[in-house]
Amino acid sequence: MSRTRGGGSERPESAAALLLVGHGSQHSPDSARPVHQLARRLRKERAFAEVRVGFWKEDPHLHSAMDLIESHDVFVVPCLTSTGYFTESVIPRELGLTGRTTRRAGRTIRYCRPVGAHPAMEGFVLERAREVAPLDPADEARATLVVVGHGTEKHPGSGGTTRSLVERLQGRGRYRRVIAAFLDEEPRVEGLLDAFDDSYLILVPFFMSDGWHVGTTLPRALALSGGRTERGSTTIWYAQPVGTHPALTDVVRELVAEERARPGNATVPPVVEGAGATPADVTNARYEFLDWISQAGVGGRVFLQTAVRLCESSASGEPRFEVRHLADRDRDPSELRKFRDLEEAVELAALSNTGGHRPLKTAPDLVAGWRFAGLGPEGLWEVFTHLYPAAPVHRYLAAQGRLSVTPFEQVAARQSGIYAGIGRISAAEVGELVGVCCAREHCLRTPTWAGVGEDDDGEGPDVDRTPCPEPCSVLLGRAKETLDLAGRALDATRGRA
Ligand code: SF4
Image (cartoon, rainbow, N blue to C red; front, side):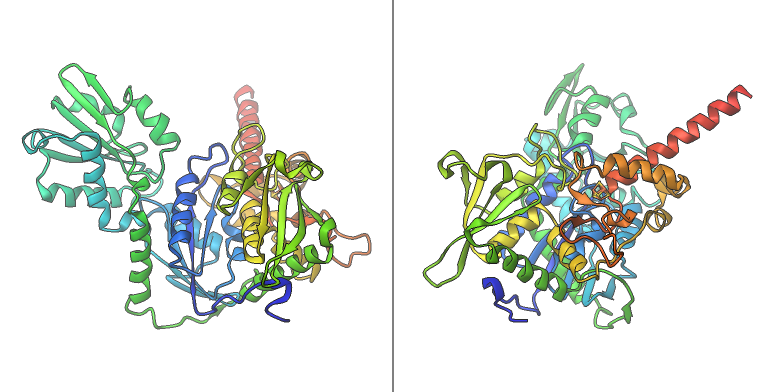
């Protein structure tokens, strides 16, 4: 296949990609936002051939994150403040990692330490404390600095990163006391204010985002009123979370450099058998997608909720494309907001047409009223990677009859923690969930993993649809609710007996 088909340019195969991994949320955009912002800054720095993101609880889902990447070398950096259940269980499982270095589906994937483990966190905590409480040294020596982590009693090592950070800060002797407190393990933050009669208390959230916990849970638990709260003879300052510090890009680059230089890294492990798109698949999907659009000429194509068309060529003969919302297909361009920055597509995909969070990018509620114009082939691909992550790749693989599909039972079997038992729901209940979650009014993908969308002749999936290769976090969340309801019904029955 020609490497310039559709006008696409070659990517250097030796250049590495970066995958930033976050928790994500089905309920709020606040969890993913700092990861997207970090990715945006790193893309602008051009330190990596590609910078992609992947989340456990929202799109782009971790299980499809590698389907976004064309590079052969990938560094995975968890955007988390601590090591624990998520870094040791969830991320390796969802990405199919077998250790610090994994070779699978044509890639060498290197798994870095989470950002919270970097020594720079010490300085970030102190900077956050000073920003909110600019005390002179004499007053600092009278103040207590509290580093507030999440923690969890489900994983014994969860608070370890916070505790070792606190130990290092204690060694600096700048504040009278430096202590750790947690949301979900002892010592809990709720009892904190009664434990001290200090005049000055500075709370620094050791969290990645200013999401629900930092914005609501902690202020509510401590009855805080903004950045500064006066209570009796105590002044309480509440800082910005450490994870939104602007120098986090340096931390990510250093974690990658550390992993690259790690002794033993030169030992290349054997290739792990596994499904998923190879770098060549992703590249070919890109060319196929561009060809598909180019062949339609100015009439264009409809892809999910967008209308995309070839509109002109640059002076060098490179094709130029326009993308807009399908509902705006016949509107005059002057009526639409024109985006120039490709990163605007991340913002577009984040919020629905009613302003709500969009954990599924294929939900049919993409906001209208915009257009990207004059896009080159690379820019067009970038826009669709943000709007509909991995969807063109899955469409391409389905057309080839090579889409790897993971049924509910297999996904359920690999779950752990509170999701461990979801495989106990019946096939009929799974079918009901598909009928609700995957209905066209909720999601524009076709749940191929559930056998929906197969041609009548049984020769493969219907490629006019955008296939969904495995149950997403929204469906798994509903499966958990179904299991909980069944458990409560059983408990109620036993209670009556
Ligand atoms: S599991 Fe259903 S709702 Fe989730 S992405 Fe797939 S088709 Fe859409």
